[in-house]
Amino acid sequence: MRMQQENKVVILLIIGVVFSFYFPEITMAASLSFEQAVEFGLENSDTLKDIKQEIEGLERDIELIKAGQNWQVTVDADYNLTDNDNVSGDEDGDLGIGFTKDYSSGFSLGPTIDVDTDDFSSEYTIDVSQKIFPWTPIESDQDLYTQEKKLEKLKKKLAENRTVQLISWLETYLNLIRLKEKEVVYTEELKLAKKEFKEVEAKSDIGEAGKIEFLKSQLTVKEAAYQLKNLKKNFRRVKKTFVRT
Image (cartoon, rainbow, N blue to C red; front, top):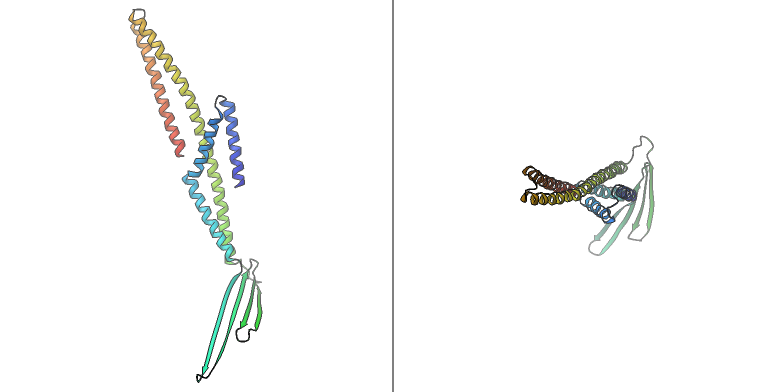
């Protein structure tokens, strides 16, 4: 997790450098909006959500396996009542508590305590065993190793997918910035074309501008308007892609 946070900080620093070098006129608010978009995207990405859920499931499985490798407790109790001619009765019984633990080395430890409920005497025994040959890891260790390897691969996959998405978002965001800059330029060009058309139209009314000049000026306005319209349409399309990525 710490590594992922450090990677994110580095990426955001790179973004800041890119903005300051290529887009000095862009304010810090624009950079912040990108960071907020990244936060939102990482939290709501279906791909990353699926991987995170798999990781959480494996972590729970690993905890269960580790819990199963701890000391296991078993309790046994026997109670007997003997009644002869309904005159006298003998009661006896015993209580046994056993502990077992298997180690990955093949070593097994099993202490047991037996208590006689008749005179409350106790007896302590311990079973110790060690597998010599052939030795194979206990099943829980094999499961633990398999699950931990899967978890390692999933975490690597998550980090790789995060990086890919961050790069994709950065490229798309920079594209949006460029399109926004072009929109400002195209808007000014359209204003200028409309202004020039009004001047040509006024000259045409008093016979100082010919029909060709009038039509040419009118066409310039239409081309500028069409260019701006297409750019806005492209901006909306790219923005939609950015939000859905």
